[in-house]
Length: 142
Image 1: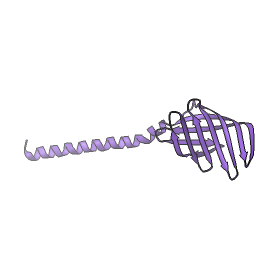
Image 2: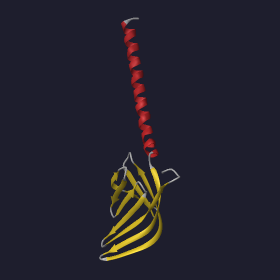
Image 3: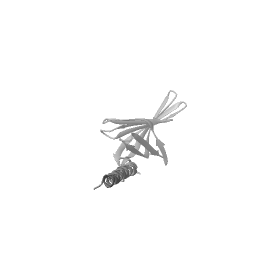
Image 4: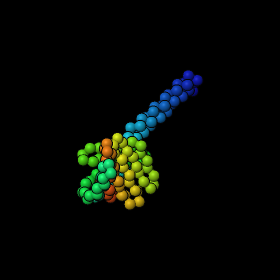
């Protein structure tokens, strides 16, 4: 085999290897978003008790509300779906014990051992705290 033929074959093999590495990287990049979505879990929660504090007044009532929590530990995201509106929480912390996060006038805390939940809404002169229990959803997360 001449030097020119060997160099040509070697260069072609190098281009094929480079194309294979590029194709693999592209395939991994395309798969990444779907893998991240697959890690999201959903909790269906029933809020059963409402505490409201306005100024110095304090009121406790029973309620029956449903909220859905979607969380992804790898991405560090928490989303509260309440009254048909999705609230994407910031300042999210997830540990083996609890999950917390807040955004604007809404904060969330979940005890992971019992799936107890507290959802707080803040207004100018009042705080509403809703308490309940969550369970892992049978349906997959969106």
